[in-house]
Length: 434
Ligand code: GDP
Image (cartoon, rainbow, N blue to C red):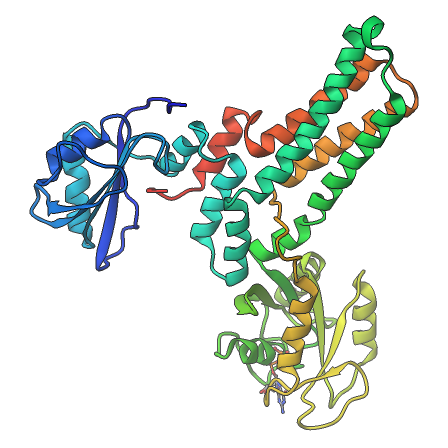
């Protein structure tokens, strides 16, 4: 299959930071032609994937690496040109290529072309972005899996299974005399199996979100319990305000750290206590809102003071389990909650380990993202309705509509049935050169 022909584009692909080496990519049907004009040593018959050393028209030198059509990242004829990594040299080379007929690539345009040329599907394109953005080991591992196409295969095979049932339904509508009635029992079993597979994917949404955006821990509790000290101790630096005057963390401080490869977001909130102070009241309302959106809540109290009635009231006001932490146990012992000391660090390692054990994703399982989740949920809803309709012996025409809907939503995940708008939105998030 030959790639679709678009105009020729160029961009630096190694960012705009100064570095020892930088690369510029040209892609499109005139890529080699343009390279031959800006690169002194371009061979008469370039071989794909074989680098040549030479000097560019602007005086810098480096390697030219040709890729033949269908053997490149974009699927188009391309060249990657290495230069010394000064932003001036890279700008000059891009400018030279533009003078020879190339156009500066839009953000994500190389990957968009790879998608349009069938080199990768939308889940893999998203995984390219996630690989570039990966800041923790686990984010990288998850991105690698989807880039390899593990999610693509699972979604495609679910969609194929839907289409198979659809074909049977349509055949029984169109050729009922030749092939007989639809086997409702078998169809119902198949649809249920497909729903189960979708459920397994949907169950990864939580882990997917946490691995991408971080596990959010809200640190709440009365003023002066040591919330800011705990945050600083876990981060190993002084970022939150620590004072002896109750009520100093009026707003909230959000910090990220990585534990066992997982991103954790710690949120130091305003202290919870009844107050007349307007600013503090707003802070406390926010604290409740933050706690409501967090993945875990740590309720920290001062072990010297013990839990008071206001603490018990606050604890009751959260609608889910809260981990109670007794702080300052370097000064006194406690018999309620997990004993820790933000000052000496006692109990903190164990605290972080207990968090990450909650978040382990099954190895090898691809994770879905916030775009995939509603599409899978819509496909599931259509299939569920289809299942009920089969069991109620609804007309086959209706089954066919519901199965087509499900196939359509699944196809939007991988790209076959994605609207131009959806595709635009995905590539909009990419950086120039990707
Ligand atoms: P917050 O209002 O809950 O954020 O409390 P801070 O972090 O500002 O701490 C209040 C006071 O308690 C400060 O003087 C801290 O130095 C002290 N403090 C915090 N944690 C500990 C601890 O584990 N042991 C001891 N001895 N003092 C602590």
